[in-house]
Amino acid sequence: MRLTCYECLAMGNAVGMIEVVLRSETIAAIQKKMYGGNVSAAFQEDPLYKWLKDKNASDDEFLNAQQNFIYSCAGYCVATYVLGVGDRHNDNILLTPTGHLVHIDFGHILGNVEKFKGFKRETAPFVLTKEFVYVMGGKNSEGFKLFVNLCCDTFLILRKNYHGLVNLFTMMLSTGLPELRRTEDMIYLLNSLVLDMNEVDARAYFEKLINVALEAVMTRVNNAIHIFAHPDVKEDV
Image (cartoon, one colour):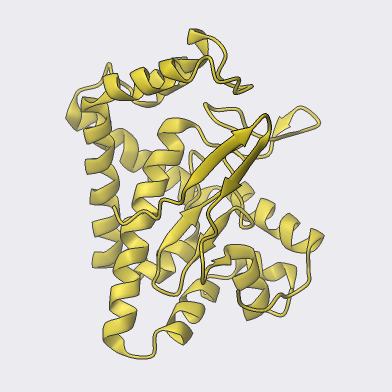
């Protein structure tokens, strides 16, 4: 799925090293650059598209970046949903000039999302905004159709191999993760895979999740809040 995996090395209690993803920008940084730090950038459709076009001058380069974007976006949509990764916003998602999306900061998993005064700040099953779909070519494009098929195919593959996921999480029970201490904490993982459904229904289920995510207003509101809190426009890394 063209995902960018970066190395993490534990060196002690609450101490470690994380590999730097070179030549990458946060989605927030790109939005601010394209619209001068204005909060309205979170509600525009074209900032990521413009940024990638600027980084990929030729048609072939852009098409390659677009394909990388579609594949990596699909991979992370499925992964963050199944694993219940929370705190997803424009400061926790990177984009490289080659079109690869990269999620960072996995402090909340298994459906444990950020709350504000008792209300969940994240209502979408995963991050998929209209600006993401704009990069793909729009909702009626072949690129978006490819994205949907990749998501559904990946979801079905994970369902078939759910035992491996459960085994990995079982081995992590003793690692001290605050949101993974008991076997009961893994119920979210099993529920997210809807193992009681057949493949046809499971595919339709994930297609519905894509539409829910795309229409989730709170995703863009959260992005706007982060731009408002950090309006400065930084230079490229």
